Image 1 (cartoon, rainbow, N blue to C red):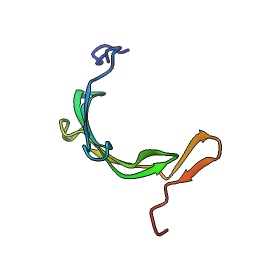
Image 2: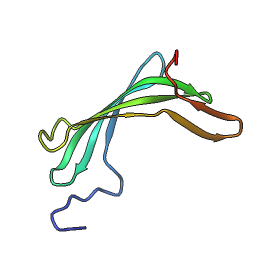
Image 3: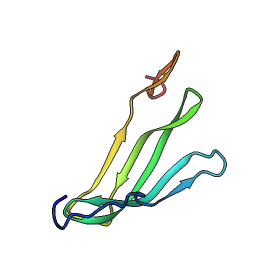
Image 4: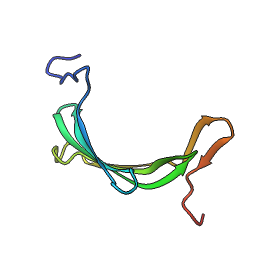
Length: 99
């Protein structure tokens, strides 16, 4: 580790999850991350386009923003198009409906 770098505690960084009361699906997560050159920053992850894969609900779209570090970092969208569950006989593609 270089001098001046932020050290992540072995317990990890805390986060809070926003869970849909009716479905139990996680809709968002609010927490912290270490950004090189900017230090400890707040991070917001919003989960959407939930699909059922092998009996479990999975968010195929995650929008991640670091609003506390303007100019240094921004936002990104992660989209998952394929999941391999490693469960015999279960492998599904997260293709949008109608395609």
